[in-house]
Length: 290
Picture (cartoon, rainbow, N blue to C red):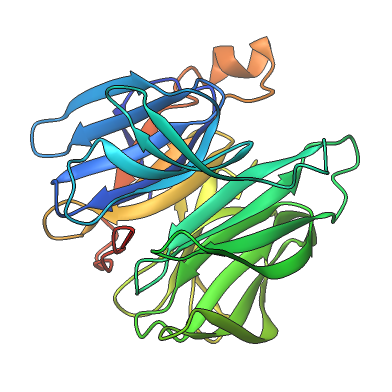
């Protein structure tokens, strides 16, 4: 199974892709390009908007226009109007740590935003953390000692949170209370042959994980078995999400970050948006409830 290019957007570092059923839009961020992208899959029309900083992950806000989002910028959490550029800061992220920034995140079944950080220092030390942003804008730290947070997503019943600290090359599964947002015991679900990046979950409860530098997206069963892989024709898949009205298309963002001129000559579509219909549907990711 092979993903095909659907938009040759050549993002510097495409990430954080999600489907907003309320607006009928696919949305993703180009972190280092400082852009938020939207696309209507029905017509293929795509638009990009500049954002005031490195937007690492985000979610649309329930009952509001598409351009009003909760944003995890590299330096902190905020509410953002993408069109006007108006940014209302909620809290700085790890202001005492100069080398860390926010990275991956998704909303949980109740519409809380779970977002984690990464260390951009030369050794990518496990000094960062993962936080829960509640609809009332209160922040709670839920995981410590993280080097590079990725793969945050939730089982269909909301009782398992999947997560990867990418240098571990593994996917963790945490017990999760969807009523309170509390994180419980953790187990090591799967060993990844490569570097796990962003993930999503399908209607059968399987985890789809983009493998950085791996040219693929892997599907893992809830008991940790590798079920299948989707080939991606560029080296750096970053994140994936099911979208479209039937949630039957898997969209995959990719990156050009750190690529050599030689590789870009071989893979000019790097940074593009890819898609495949894998024969299984996804589940909706709720908007931010605040």
